[in-house]
Length: 206
Image (cartoon, rainbow, N blue to C red):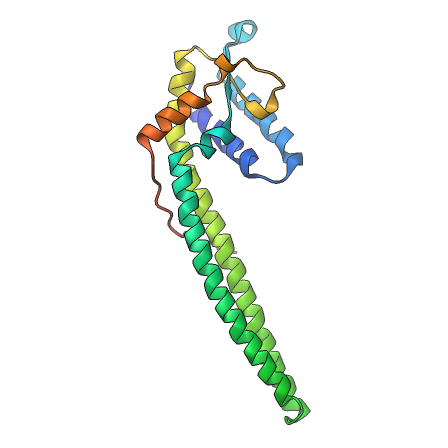
């Protein structure tokens, strides 16, 4: 029987590869995946492995819960950027006014006002970056809920066919369609999980 706790590591690694833009990381992630899964394979079964294929990208792309998460994230991002655009306009107006005062203010006073404005502009930039990072973190936390739901589903399907090894589709050159369990996972996942509320989570303190 394939133990669920190993699928937790597999899904975590797979998710990182599916959403990472750092191609150089792919190889090491999936080496770790192979090692993690091989830990549950008895030495006596090495020569008789039953392999199944899992396309994590396909599963997430066709997940109703993932679609729901992306919809909520898009709404939150639009709201954040709308506030940012309005605030940028206010800052540009303040900068224009400051530039107009330059010719009438004493140099010392102008420099003080300029420093105060630059500080305000930098604070705004940092706040916007923090909000977008918070949104990205909240998305990851929500996706983790999908992965947790997937764990027993993947475990059950793999066990039902006696699989001793799961390979991610992107890591193989060829695989017979009947080895791919992705569609079965999508069907069962969508039957039990269609929505995941996205809640903004606080950023880790530095």
